[in-house]
Length: 173
Image (cartoon, rainbow, N blue to C red):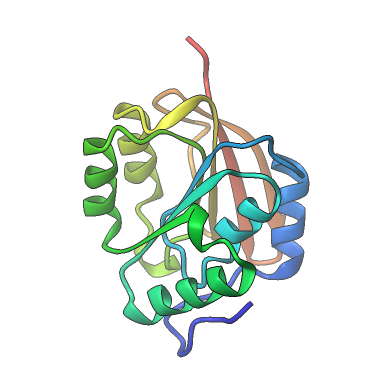
């Protein structure tokens, strides 16, 4: 798997990725994943390799988009993926217009520009998450996320040094 050239992205370490998927998977029986700050596409591609049917990758960096496409091709997942160069807010609006719903949403934004709570609110309020869906947030350990964001409840949180993975599930009403 290729990394994005330069220093604008921070790839999720293999240890964190493995732990994350052991918690939320480790395998899926179909479904759709959204990798919103995709970087190299590593997390979304991992979800595809573990049984997700399709993935949508979003990143605003051209280098990232090129890298995602290359990694999808190398893994032979091109047919099961859509890749868009866009910022997160505009991408979410476009997905709402298409009435897309996701079983898994991966949020790993650049640490300096985190808007995780507002992004999760948009996802929740606009029905972008399936009823039994999961939202995974990767953030630095100095960021505190609430136990509840709309219908999304913090299910589990794991710390790996300076990285924290916060996993939210949609509360069934």
